[in-house]
Image 1 (cartoon, rainbow, N blue to C red):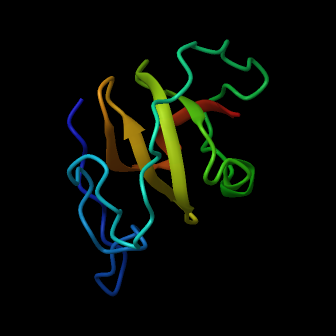
Image 2 (image 1 turned 45 degrees about the vertical axis):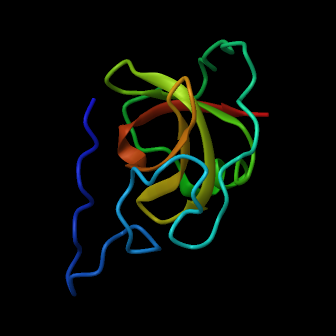
Length: 119
C-alpha cells in the first residue's frame, strides 16, 4: 500500500509534528531526531485484541501508551505490521514501520487503525 500524503488542516500546517515526509532511509533519525530501533521487532505475530477492533478511530490517549515500544498494528484495510511510534497527535501517529528488512519512517491517520497492541 502506498502511503497517502498527510492532509493539511486550516493554516497549511501538516498533522505530522515534524513537517517531514515519511519514508526516510533506514536507521536515519526521524525529522524530530527520533531514532529508529537498532534491532528488528519480535519474530511473532500477536493475536488481534478483539475488544479493540471497531469502526471508530483509535483514541490518541490509548496508543500514546505505546510510544517508544514495539507495537503491532492492524489496519482497517487488512494490512498488519510492527510499528515503533515516536509521536501521537490528535489525528495521527508517526514513527518507524518494519518492512521486513529495516525500519522506515512512517505516519498514519488514527482512523485507519483497526487495532493495536504494544510490548
